[in-house]
Amino acid sequence: MTSMKKERPLQESDKSLRGFDSEERPWGTWTVLAEGVGYKVKLIEVRPGHRLSLQFHHYRSEHWVVVSGRGRAIIDTKVLELYPGESVVVPLRSVHRLENPWSDSLKIVEVQRGEILSEEDIVRLEDDYQRADARVTGDE
Image (cartoon, rainbow, N blue to C red):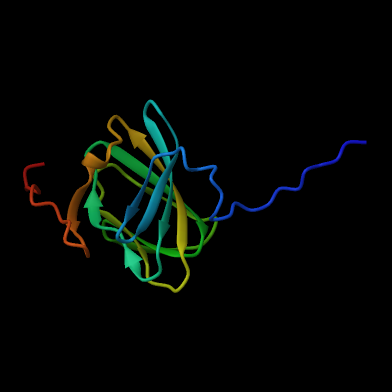
């Protein structure tokens, strides 16, 4: 008879994600889970009461899946409230923002697809942390 190992949820103290690219931001954190030619997958955690920049990307689209908490997605003129298991697509060049106005952390998995997937492809239009992009012009 073989014994089955019982899996436990990932704990904050787990070191299994340490080898991946990760960054602390004023609004929370992101960690790259996987990447390859034309795609990158991140786990993004948004702290309660925080939100990401109002932004767009020249070279990538994004697909957000809520894994815990709830979030508010603003994509162009649409405002969507998202719950665990729900998802939304952010098309290329769409102005968007992810918000967490609630008291629990928001965790999403973000799948980026495009020809350039670097952090330099973020054009910030508004930002709560004074990081808005001075390069924004009307001719792009």
